[in-house]
Image (cartoon, rainbow, N blue to C red; front, side, top):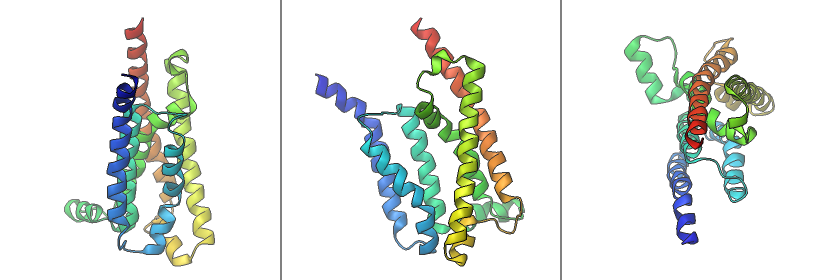
Length: 209
């Protein structure tokens, strides 16, 4: 009986990992720019094996696994084409008369929206005891910090990498304010996710009382 409950508990994380690996392997074949693909996947090479290795000691919620998987799939698509050349972004640019491919903007917004829950579970273990305002603030700040850290990592990697690959990796498309706009969109996504997450935590606390 205990083994059966354990199998049910492992089902969603296992499905998420399987789906991600299928997509990742498929898109690892003949990416548009191999050097850029390697740079884009550096954090994936660390984060996914670490999550698998520590699964028994630290398990996220099913919702967190699903949201993280969705984000990683979107990131994997961006790494296959490079963010500035994803076909969906090109289609939207041409269809709506935009000045650039905005796929990277979408993914930065979804970084905040989808990864706030996993980040909150990783850093704030007793969310119910924090109160609504403190939970919103700390969850929001954690994503803003990670967004800024990612932009700094991008800059450092681009400085030491092959210049051509580094330029594609940054994907600024000639916008000198690209990093600031990316962080602003991640912050917006995080603010929306923090409101929803705080409401879910409070509802769960009321249900248990």
